Length: 151
Image (cartoon, rainbow, N blue to C red; front, side, top):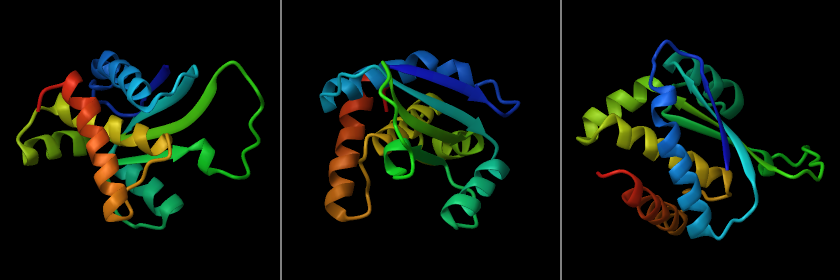
């Protein structure tokens, strides 16, 4: 899996987690039995930028911690057969990483990896709109993450 990391902030955490994200990607593909050469991007953004994205694309007028845009969700997207399968984009709010790590009593590394894993599962088509979907998705998150980074 190729993960393109873009840092649109002054926070230097973006490249810090590149190896962890790669391990999470490999682990997710193993567990989900996905074997294509996937490519995706992770964009680290400010609270203001993620608020703007959330408002403009989801009509929710507040910042959030992570937003995923899966290309498979876009019915207007015409996929050209290529060697790689593009999954989409994950936007991570750098301030939420720090705030939520403190709130949940774990490391910023664990929180950044959790948000990435959560976003990746959305790119693979998982959701948590119902209780059953949430149970499946959150179970997968734990199974993938616990081997990569301690709670």
